[in-house]
Image (tube, rainbow, N blue to C red; front, side, top):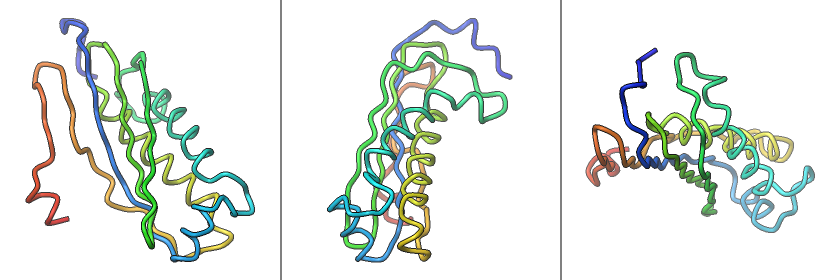
Length: 149
């Protein structure tokens, strides 16, 4: 584990995104809250928040952090649900893993809530989009990298 004790606590933020691809009729059910298991996006939001707070329990050598805020937002397309998570803290190490974990678990929750209606679903495109704070400063995914994916 990297020694973070010499670092000063500073504001840090990370943004991650992924997509759950599905049949168009499944996205209609998600959007209209008509899935048999209930409110898909509400359950996925809570799962994403809980996951951000538990990242260090799941990832070896990941520092436990006091997570200040977690935002989990959704965009529904014709054949996908895009998940975007933002995690913020004031701490000695970054929150990239918390944002990525939040996004992945929210996507898994969408999958779980919809699997009885659609076995064709896939989860992909999980990546860090930006981070701020810390010794390395700010970073943002470049447009050309986005276009290649």
